[in-house]
Image (cartoon, rainbow, N blue to C red; front, side, top):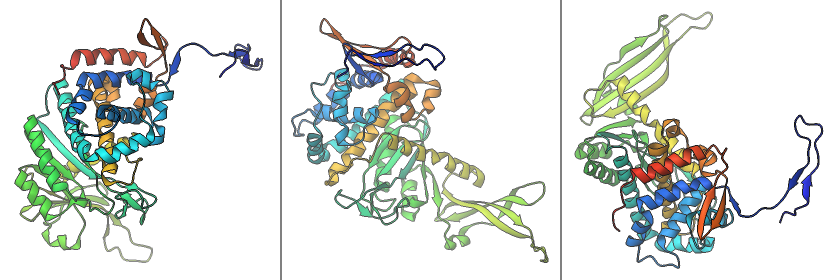
Length: 450
């Protein structure tokens, strides 16, 4: 507790006021999470709590399932990432902002993860898609064309007590056990389409075919007319290519640089060359499994050493092969279209900024559920970022939004049984919060009944 007579001494050596600074306590509660009021407003406007409770009646526990979901999502947005961070919601004034009677104890939340995953994981996947559809409605409707970008990520684990922690593909720390979830996004809109949690020993493409079929069906049901799938070389297989042909979608599938592919490439042609003739871009069009195999290669001329003959030797500096069924695209255009999907790496990094994967327990389903909650937090943040903040905020990452908006300081006061959140007049976040809150009130239709 701060005593009223604590103070710092005078500072005559500074330019400005040299007066002492008194440190005093004051009435009311200060919170550093005033901007989370936008999350509360959006949560209620979307009817998420009522929707969850209406479909998770069989989940055991002392707390409502919606409170467990909301408290963890808010913790991720606030900056926490492990169960021991849950008391921060109690001590920093977040509980009063959201009107909770109490915050679940970390041990209680851990037990809930273990006992509710079988019901909650598929339920949250359905809820995520519902949120994507609602965001598109606010933006004027579903996009006419959409590119599904799918990729996996490796979460390193230290020890084998976390269920599903296995030794597998791990470029960060080879030999260490890990988890290996699979994620999918819409390239054009930045929306997350979901996550499939997998143990560390799972192959990159494990479960991708069945999930792609479900995602394509969802997009077509939403009114998307043209669907393209972009996959990296970890998904390369004849089975994947055949499955996308059956689904009737366009695709761009990167091909590993295998030696046996040399016989399937077409003849190399020079597409561009610099003025000196020392660097050139070559392309080739071939066929593999009845589909176009497009190749691009950059190379530079290697000069002879002193005393050697000039044999016009060339060194390849970049080479790439893309398998595609798009008939109107050339090798260079295919390579550029594939590279545009590299933004999925940034989307996965944004999930990392929301502490996705930091929590692990000794239960398979319990390790899958935090990932479902993390993508829910991502989408809940993406809605105001893309629809209500607008402008340059559409490119701001979660870390920046948290620092400049969600963690805005405010005072929580109560009068006549009415709680208020008061910001300083000079608070920069206030100019963003008011328009966002008004836009949520005007822009969201009433939630459908549970």
